[in-house]
Amino acid sequence: MISRRKFIFFSTLVMGLILVLLAPFAALGADQFASPAFEQQWNSVEGTIPNFWGPLKTARQGQTEQYVEGVYNGESGKRLVQYFDKARMEQTNPQRAVTNGLLTVELKTGRLQLGDSSFEQRDQAFIEIAGDQDAPGPTYATLNALVERVPQRSGAVDRGYDVPSKTFVNVPPATDPELAFVTYQGDPGGRFGQNIPKAFWDYLNAIPGGWLPTMGYPIGEAFGTQVQVNGQSTFVVVQAFERRVLTYTPANPTRFRVEFGNIGRHYYRWRYERSRPTTATTTAAPSGAKVTVTANPASKTATVTISGTGFAANGAILLQFSSQHEGTTTAVTPTPVSGAGTFTLVEHLGQEDFTFDTSLTVNILDATTKAVLASVIVMLT
Image (cartoon, rainbow, N blue to C red):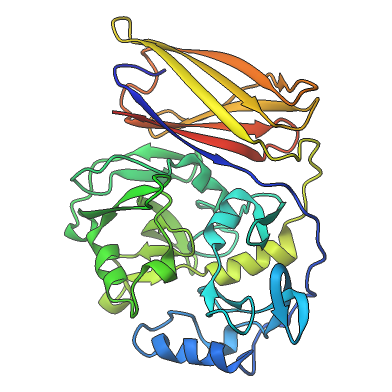
């Protein structure tokens, strides 16, 4: 599958799993802000950008959630939060600033964050990113098929999501000038990197105080798809960031063509109404995943050896490849993890695969829960 170019690797490893009790279901429709700090945060932006947070009348009442570093009313291990349509406000303790959670990342991976370094593995969120609730369309779990870091390039949005086949596909570059790529943004550590179209970049730069605290870094390519909006098929372009999702709907009035997705509402539904802790047998966090590649440019083939250490003993993993052109392919046969917590597997990749790609992602999955234990992004440069 891999050919012609050298390989650069970035690894992302999963932390251990921690089981916790969750706050009770909160009634929809808040009658007040949970704190003066939340009210100040809401008022500082909502008048400038309509639906930056969403109306108070459709928000949830303030509540506490378990968080290892949290302190609320003198009680350790809890923090104050309030869910709005477009995000969650949170304050870990009275001395910390009000922040947005990494909601998109949690929904995509199923890793519920319960502390700065504490997580609980749940099901990934099969909740639609845009459009009518429970109508066919891309979900947050779908985002796992997108590469987190792509090369910088010119051009325009040329990725689409095909609803009937539930796959990402290549499409002709968009001719709408709002969908031309105008910038490339990535994190300093090199995990994320995406081209951003003009419509989204203009919107981001209008956010008071800078867009990064609100959005986080982009974690997937912008893509077009058809979703149901009030029962009508509607074209929309989506791009996911760590904290929120942006949508561009050219059929909307100008002021509302770019909007935040309803991720606060979606996250609450996932956390309290839909998801459940997984019953993983492989729960230990890997201390490292080393990937070595031996390529033969002349024959355009490669042998990929993947070895891991620090996994739960006597478990099993699956290898998964994900690329723009070929989509996602998961191995059928599990690879056992030894009693020492190690594994090694070899994959032979041919020239017919990834011919049109500049990168791919290799995921190491828990064979029982299908949770991602490690991800290695392979840049073909």
